[in-house]
Image (tube, rainbow, N blue to C red; front, side, top):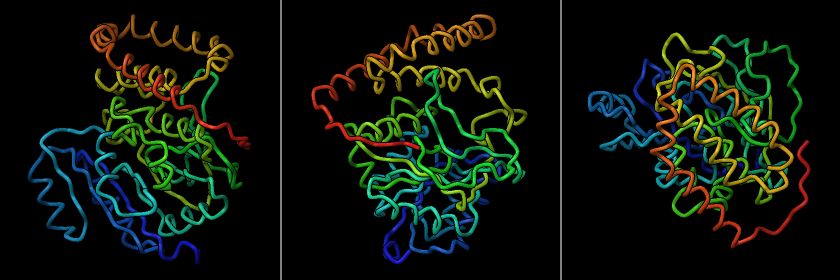
Length: 326
Protein backbone atom coordinates (compact mmCIF):
# COMPACT_ATOMS: atom_id res chain seq x y z
CA UNK A 1 0.00 0.00 0.00
CA UNK A 2 3.00 2.35 0.00
CA UNK A 3 2.21 3.60 -3.52
CA UNK A 4 -1.31 4.45 -2.41
CA UNK A 5 -0.49 6.00 0.95
CA UNK A 6 -0.80 9.57 -0.33
CA UNK A 7 -3.82 9.06 -2.59
CA UNK A 8 -7.07 10.73 -1.66
CA UNK A 9 -10.26 8.69 -1.98
CA UNK A 10 -13.55 10.51 -2.44
CA UNK A 11 -16.52 8.60 -1.05
CA UNK A 12 -19.82 9.65 -2.60
CA UNK A 13 -23.00 8.51 -0.85
CA UNK A 14 -26.38 9.12 -2.43
CA UNK A 15 -29.25 9.09 0.02
CA UNK A 16 -33.02 9.43 -0.11
CA UNK A 17 -33.25 9.69 3.67
CA UNK A 18 -34.95 6.32 4.05
CA UNK A 19 -34.81 4.39 7.33
CA UNK A 20 -31.49 4.81 9.18
CA UNK A 21 -29.33 3.65 6.29
CA UNK A 22 -27.15 6.74 5.98
CA UNK A 23 -26.33 6.78 9.68
CA UNK A 24 -25.12 3.16 9.55
CA UNK A 25 -23.19 3.72 6.34
CA UNK A 26 -21.34 6.73 7.74
CA UNK A 27 -20.60 4.87 10.96
CA UNK A 28 -18.84 2.12 8.98
CA UNK A 29 -16.45 4.69 7.51
CA UNK A 30 -15.12 5.94 10.85
CA UNK A 31 -12.97 2.87 11.70
CA UNK A 32 -11.54 2.41 8.17
CA UNK A 33 -7.89 1.36 8.23
CA UNK A 34 -7.22 3.68 5.29
CA UNK A 35 -7.99 7.18 6.50
CA UNK A 36 -7.07 9.50 3.63
CA UNK A 37 -10.56 10.09 2.28
CA UNK A 38 -13.24 12.74 1.99
CA UNK A 39 -16.99 12.12 2.20
CA UNK A 40 -19.59 13.74 -0.01
CA UNK A 41 -23.28 13.12 0.66
CA UNK A 42 -25.77 13.89 -2.11
CA UNK A 43 -29.08 14.32 -0.34
CA UNK A 44 -32.08 13.45 -2.52
CA UNK A 45 -34.53 13.38 0.38
CA UNK A 46 -35.92 16.89 -0.30
CA UNK A 47 -36.43 17.02 3.46
CA UNK A 48 -34.80 20.06 5.12
CA UNK A 49 -35.05 18.45 8.57
CA UNK A 50 -33.14 15.40 7.37
CA UNK A 51 -30.51 17.59 5.70
CA UNK A 52 -30.01 19.68 8.83
CA UNK A 53 -29.68 16.53 10.91
CA UNK A 54 -26.87 15.29 8.66
CA UNK A 55 -25.07 18.62 8.87
CA UNK A 56 -25.25 18.79 12.66
CA UNK A 57 -24.12 15.21 13.28
CA UNK A 58 -21.45 15.20 10.55
CA UNK A 59 -19.89 18.68 10.36
CA UNK A 60 -16.77 17.48 8.52
CA UNK A 61 -18.46 16.04 5.44
CA UNK A 62 -19.59 17.83 2.30
CA UNK A 63 -23.33 17.80 1.66
CA UNK A 64 -25.23 18.75 -1.45
CA UNK A 65 -28.97 19.18 -1.17
CA UNK A 66 -30.72 20.60 -4.21
CA UNK A 67 -34.29 21.65 -4.97
CA UNK A 68 -35.04 18.45 -6.90
CA UNK A 69 -34.35 14.73 -6.83
CA UNK A 70 -31.26 14.21 -9.00
CA UNK A 71 -31.79 10.45 -9.17
CA UNK A 72 -28.76 8.22 -8.77
CA UNK A 73 -26.76 8.97 -11.92
CA UNK A 74 -27.06 12.74 -11.85
CA UNK A 75 -26.38 12.69 -8.11
CA UNK A 76 -23.12 10.78 -8.64
CA UNK A 77 -22.14 13.20 -11.40
CA UNK A 78 -22.62 16.07 -8.96
CA UNK A 79 -20.53 14.28 -6.37
CA UNK A 80 -17.71 13.61 -8.83
CA UNK A 81 -17.73 17.27 -9.86
CA UNK A 82 -17.29 18.20 -6.18
CA UNK A 83 -14.59 15.57 -5.58
CA UNK A 84 -10.87 16.11 -5.03
CA UNK A 85 -9.84 12.47 -4.87
CA UNK A 86 -7.72 10.35 -7.19
CA UNK A 87 -10.22 7.54 -6.63
CA UNK A 88 -14.00 7.59 -6.38
CA UNK A 89 -15.94 5.16 -4.18
CA UNK A 90 -19.66 5.33 -4.99
CA UNK A 91 -21.96 3.97 -2.29
CA UNK A 92 -25.65 3.43 -1.84
CA UNK A 93 -26.64 4.60 1.62
CA UNK A 94 -27.87 1.06 2.42
CA UNK A 95 -24.27 -0.24 2.38
CA UNK A 96 -21.96 -0.98 5.32
CA UNK A 97 -18.23 -1.52 4.81
CA UNK A 98 -15.86 -3.73 6.76
CA UNK A 99 -13.13 -1.64 8.38
CA UNK A 100 -10.42 -2.66 5.90
CA UNK A 101 -12.58 -2.35 2.77
CA UNK A 102 -10.96 0.79 1.36
CA UNK A 103 -7.41 -0.40 2.10
CA UNK A 104 -7.96 -3.79 0.47
CA UNK A 105 -9.86 -2.50 -2.57
CA UNK A 106 -7.50 0.39 -3.18
CA UNK A 107 -4.52 -1.95 -3.31
CA UNK A 108 -6.00 -3.68 -6.35
CA UNK A 109 -5.34 -0.66 -8.52
CA UNK A 110 -1.60 -1.37 -8.10
CA UNK A 111 -1.87 -4.73 -9.84
CA UNK A 112 -2.34 -3.37 -13.35
CA UNK A 113 -2.19 0.19 -14.68
CA UNK A 114 -5.32 -0.45 -16.77
CA UNK A 115 -7.50 -1.44 -13.81
CA UNK A 116 -10.10 1.29 -13.54
CA UNK A 117 -12.93 -0.48 -11.69
CA UNK A 118 -12.69 -2.56 -8.50
CA UNK A 119 -15.28 -4.66 -6.69
CA UNK A 120 -15.08 -6.35 -3.33
CA UNK A 121 -17.22 -9.21 -2.11
CA UNK A 122 -20.67 -7.78 -1.49
CA UNK A 123 -22.87 -9.71 0.91
CA UNK A 124 -26.46 -9.21 2.00
CA UNK A 125 -27.28 -7.86 5.44
CA UNK A 126 -27.40 -11.40 6.90
CA UNK A 127 -23.64 -11.66 6.13
CA UNK A 128 -24.23 -15.15 4.72
CA UNK A 129 -25.82 -14.51 1.32
CA UNK A 130 -23.89 -13.18 -1.67
CA UNK A 131 -25.16 -10.05 -3.35
CA UNK A 132 -22.42 -9.60 -5.96
CA UNK A 133 -18.88 -10.79 -6.63
CA UNK A 134 -18.57 -8.88 -9.85
CA UNK A 135 -20.79 -7.66 -12.63
CA UNK A 136 -20.93 -9.39 -16.01
CA UNK A 137 -22.75 -8.92 -19.31
CA UNK A 138 -25.17 -11.78 -19.94
CA UNK A 139 -26.12 -13.48 -23.22
CA UNK A 140 -29.46 -11.66 -22.92
CA UNK A 141 -27.57 -8.36 -22.70
CA UNK A 142 -28.67 -7.87 -19.13
CA UNK A 143 -26.65 -7.27 -16.00
CA UNK A 144 -25.49 -10.50 -14.37
CA UNK A 145 -24.37 -10.25 -10.76
CA UNK A 146 -22.08 -13.20 -10.10
CA UNK A 147 -23.14 -15.13 -7.00
CA UNK A 148 -26.42 -13.20 -6.67
CA UNK A 149 -28.58 -14.76 -3.93
CA UNK A 150 -26.27 -17.73 -3.31
CA UNK A 151 -25.00 -18.80 0.09
CA UNK A 152 -21.41 -17.70 0.62
CA UNK A 153 -19.45 -20.97 0.82
CA UNK A 154 -16.10 -19.54 -0.17
CA UNK A 155 -16.66 -20.27 -3.86
CA UNK A 156 -15.51 -16.80 -4.93
CA UNK A 157 -12.27 -16.35 -3.02
CA UNK A 158 -10.02 -15.86 -6.05
CA UNK A 159 -8.83 -12.42 -7.12
CA UNK A 160 -9.53 -11.99 -10.83
CA UNK A 161 -10.53 -9.73 -13.68
CA UNK A 162 -14.24 -9.06 -14.11
CA UNK A 163 -16.39 -7.13 -16.58
CA UNK A 164 -17.58 -4.47 -14.14
CA UNK A 165 -18.63 -3.61 -10.61
CA UNK A 166 -21.97 -3.40 -8.83
CA UNK A 167 -23.15 0.21 -8.59
CA UNK A 168 -24.04 -0.07 -4.90
CA UNK A 169 -20.35 -0.38 -3.96
CA UNK A 170 -18.35 0.82 -6.95
CA UNK A 171 -14.67 1.82 -6.72
CA UNK A 172 -13.37 3.79 -9.71
CA UNK A 173 -10.12 5.37 -10.78
CA UNK A 174 -10.91 9.05 -11.35
CA UNK A 175 -8.65 9.08 -14.41
CA UNK A 176 -10.78 6.35 -15.97
CA UNK A 177 -14.01 8.25 -15.33
CA UNK A 178 -12.52 11.29 -17.04
CA UNK A 179 -11.45 9.14 -19.97
CA UNK A 180 -14.94 7.72 -20.61
CA UNK A 181 -16.86 10.90 -19.84
CA UNK A 182 -19.69 11.73 -22.26
CA UNK A 183 -20.04 15.50 -22.53
CA UNK A 184 -20.75 16.62 -18.97
CA UNK A 185 -21.75 13.14 -17.80
CA UNK A 186 -19.60 10.55 -16.07
CA UNK A 187 -22.70 8.47 -15.43
CA UNK A 188 -25.28 8.80 -18.18
CA UNK A 189 -27.95 11.00 -16.58
CA UNK A 190 -30.58 9.66 -19.02
CA UNK A 191 -30.41 6.36 -17.12
CA UNK A 192 -31.59 7.91 -13.81
CA UNK A 193 -31.02 4.58 -12.01
CA UNK A 194 -30.42 0.92 -13.04
CA UNK A 195 -27.97 -0.35 -15.67
CA UNK A 196 -25.76 2.69 -15.07
CA UNK A 197 -23.07 0.40 -13.65
CA UNK A 198 -23.23 -1.85 -16.73
CA UNK A 199 -23.01 1.17 -19.05
CA UNK A 200 -19.95 2.49 -17.19
CA UNK A 201 -18.26 -0.94 -17.35
CA UNK A 202 -19.09 -1.40 -21.05
CA UNK A 203 -17.80 2.05 -21.96
CA UNK A 204 -14.65 1.43 -19.90
CA UNK A 205 -14.02 -1.92 -21.59
CA UNK A 206 -14.30 -0.34 -25.02
CA UNK A 207 -11.54 2.08 -24.02
CA UNK A 208 -9.25 -0.63 -22.73
CA UNK A 209 -9.90 -0.37 -18.99
CA UNK A 210 -10.25 -3.46 -16.80
CA UNK A 211 -12.40 -4.45 -13.87
CA UNK A 212 -10.99 -6.39 -10.92
CA UNK A 213 -12.48 -8.42 -8.06
CA UNK A 214 -10.85 -8.72 -4.63
CA UNK A 215 -12.71 -10.91 -2.11
CA UNK A 216 -10.88 -9.57 0.95
CA UNK A 217 -12.70 -6.24 0.55
CA UNK A 218 -16.08 -7.00 2.11
CA UNK A 219 -19.24 -4.90 2.14
CA UNK A 220 -22.83 -5.56 3.17
CA UNK A 221 -25.77 -4.36 1.09
CA UNK A 222 -29.50 -4.21 1.76
CA UNK A 223 -30.63 -5.25 -1.72
CA UNK A 224 -33.31 -2.81 -2.82
CA UNK A 225 -33.33 -1.00 0.50
CA UNK A 226 -33.67 2.47 -1.01
CA UNK A 227 -35.81 1.71 -4.09
CA UNK A 228 -38.14 -1.19 -3.29
CA UNK A 229 -41.17 -1.59 -1.13
CA UNK A 230 -40.20 -2.89 2.32
CA UNK A 231 -41.62 -6.34 1.60
CA UNK A 232 -39.35 -6.63 -1.43
CA UNK A 233 -36.01 -6.06 0.33
CA UNK A 234 -33.48 -8.80 -0.52
CA UNK A 235 -36.15 -10.64 -2.56
CA UNK A 236 -35.58 -12.02 -6.09
CA UNK A 237 -37.32 -10.70 -9.20
CA UNK A 238 -37.12 -7.09 -8.09
CA UNK A 239 -39.49 -5.57 -10.65
CA UNK A 240 -42.46 -6.78 -8.60
CA UNK A 241 -41.55 -4.34 -5.86
CA UNK A 242 -40.70 -1.26 -7.93
CA UNK A 243 -42.77 1.81 -8.65
CA UNK A 244 -43.96 2.22 -12.25
CA UNK A 245 -41.33 4.91 -12.88
CA UNK A 246 -38.46 2.77 -11.59
CA UNK A 247 -39.75 -0.29 -13.44
CA UNK A 248 -39.85 1.76 -16.64
CA UNK A 249 -36.24 2.87 -16.09
CA UNK A 250 -35.22 -0.74 -15.54
CA UNK A 251 -36.61 -1.71 -18.94
CA UNK A 252 -35.55 1.46 -20.77
CA UNK A 253 -31.95 1.46 -19.61
CA UNK A 254 -31.16 -2.00 -20.91
CA UNK A 255 -32.04 -0.77 -24.39
CA UNK A 256 -29.99 2.38 -23.92
CA UNK A 257 -26.93 0.37 -22.84
CA UNK A 258 -27.27 -1.92 -25.86
CA UNK A 259 -27.78 0.94 -28.33
CA UNK A 260 -24.80 2.85 -26.97
CA UNK A 261 -22.31 0.02 -26.58
CA UNK A 262 -23.13 -3.15 -28.50
CA UNK A 263 -21.18 -3.88 -31.68
CA UNK A 264 -22.95 -4.90 -34.87
CA UNK A 265 -21.56 -8.45 -34.72
CA UNK A 266 -22.28 -8.64 -31.01
CA UNK A 267 -25.89 -7.73 -31.70
CA UNK A 268 -26.20 -10.44 -34.34
CA UNK A 269 -24.62 -13.02 -32.05
CA UNK A 270 -26.84 -12.21 -29.08
CA UNK A 271 -30.04 -11.39 -30.95
CA UNK A 272 -31.74 -14.70 -29.98
CA UNK A 273 -31.07 -14.05 -26.30
CA UNK A 274 -32.19 -10.42 -26.55
CA UNK A 275 -35.41 -11.44 -28.33
CA UNK A 276 -36.13 -14.18 -25.79
CA UNK A 277 -35.67 -11.82 -22.86
CA UNK A 278 -37.79 -9.14 -24.52
CA UNK A 279 -40.62 -11.61 -25.13
CA UNK A 280 -40.71 -12.56 -21.44
CA UNK A 281 -40.48 -9.00 -20.13
CA UNK A 282 -43.07 -7.51 -22.47
CA UNK A 283 -45.44 -10.42 -21.88
CA UNK A 284 -45.21 -9.67 -18.18
CA UNK A 285 -45.87 -5.98 -18.81
CA UNK A 286 -48.86 -6.65 -21.05
CA UNK A 287 -50.41 -8.89 -18.42
CA UNK A 288 -49.56 -6.98 -15.25
CA UNK A 289 -48.25 -3.49 -16.09
CA UNK A 290 -49.62 -2.31 -19.46
CA UNK A 291 -48.84 1.30 -18.50
CA UNK A 292 -45.20 0.56 -19.35
CA UNK A 293 -46.13 0.68 -23.04
CA UNK A 294 -47.40 4.24 -22.66
CA UNK A 295 -44.16 5.22 -21.00
CA UNK A 296 -42.09 4.12 -23.98
CA UNK A 297 -44.35 5.89 -26.46
CA UNK A 298 -44.00 9.20 -24.64
CA UNK A 299 -40.30 8.85 -23.78
CA UNK A 300 -38.82 7.90 -27.13
CA UNK A 301 -36.41 10.83 -26.74
CA UNK A 302 -34.10 8.72 -24.58
CA UNK A 303 -33.57 6.23 -27.38
CA UNK A 304 -32.85 9.02 -29.85
CA UNK A 305 -30.30 10.50 -27.45
CA UNK A 306 -28.60 7.10 -27.05
CA UNK A 307 -28.33 6.84 -30.84
CA UNK A 308 -26.76 10.31 -30.97
CA UNK A 309 -24.19 9.30 -28.34
CA UNK A 310 -23.36 6.17 -30.31
CA UNK A 311 -22.95 8.12 -33.55
CA UNK A 312 -20.70 10.62 -31.80
CA UNK A 313 -18.53 7.77 -30.56
CA UNK A 314 -18.31 6.22 -34.04
CA UNK A 315 -17.05 9.54 -35.40
CA UNK A 316 -14.19 9.28 -32.91
CA UNK A 317 -13.16 5.60 -33.04
CA UNK A 318 -11.16 4.13 -30.18
CA UNK A 319 -7.85 2.37 -30.96
CA UNK A 320 -8.30 -1.37 -30.57
CA UNK A 321 -6.49 -2.97 -27.63
CA UNK A 322 -6.13 -6.61 -26.85
CA UNK A 323 -7.52 -7.24 -23.36
CA UNK A 324 -8.14 -10.61 -21.76
CA UNK A 325 -10.94 -10.75 -19.20
CA UNK A 326 -10.59 -13.88 -17.14
